[in-house]
Image 1 (cartoon, helix red, strand yellow):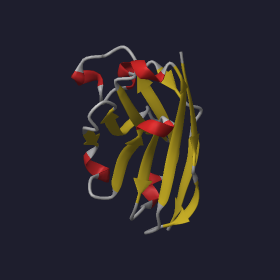
Image 2 (cartoon, rainbow, N blue to C red):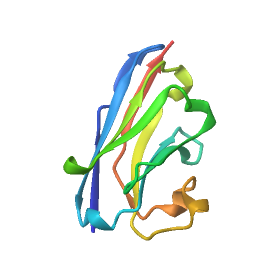
Image 3 (tube, rainbow, N blue to C red):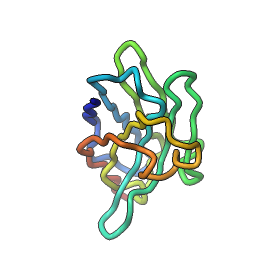
Length: 127
């Protein structure tokens, strides 16, 4: 029902900034939460940030608090991840995801809480 397309990834030096976008299409009115995850080789998807679609409540993993900001544009059906003060350890493939099932709040920080995923966009931070 929902299609997600990420964009905005690229190569940036440490301390720089990038803004990722995730455009949603389809039956987006059923979306409860949208989140960002990231993955590096050999590791599981790591929760980065999430936003409640209706009221804009936000959640972040501790390692990005104060540096990353998740936001939404309801008119454009788009969620953004503004990434500032980037560090080499932020290097990963970043995925956006949508929860259209109204999963438990405990699932917000887990990939299992989301039923639609984008293809990912590479973020590389050089030292």
